[in-house]
Image (cartoon, rainbow, N blue to C red; front, side, top):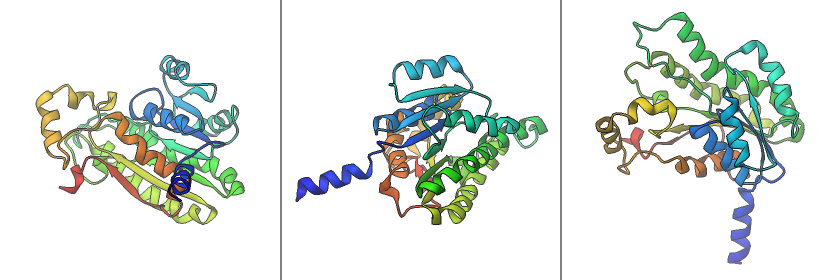
Length: 258
């Protein structure tokens, strides 16, 4: 009986036969997300700007990994991009948008160009790419959309006017996606990382005192390791989350709980 229950639990997280697209897959949390889904059995198309880093990711992955270099902030090319994403393995069953930019400009400094770049990449791209994949997900009666939220979804940080606005928008975008598409078996959720050491947070971790203060503000007493995102992400991308949709799951060691 115990063995049967364990087998059933493992099956809930098995992504064999699924196709996933992960943006921002060249580095940091996006790369970790792509590797997590690969290890769970999915075929994964990794999308990012830098072809060299994508090639490196594919070289350490498997035949089930494919890379595609592009500029996700260019809305005019998203339709063509969606077609290219679907070429290697078919249309994605799982869409994870981990790509993002944080210009760290204040409300007094932000320019229209910086605002548009941030909102296009962080908020528009996950909507308009998901839009392209939803018809195929509807036909299958199954799909998973996972957006990347942030501490700034709920908190205001210095120099985060555009980034914070985009990540606050992610929470509502995710709820709207869930409201419209979940009846077709397409669950939409967001994962909200705390402080993880990535390129995007280099300015934070280059200041050891600041990094230590951030760790102290969590309930667990440390900052995140890349592996910490794997379990929550896999949960949201698998059958384990069949009755979970429209939610923002904070993976921040309890930073937002205090």
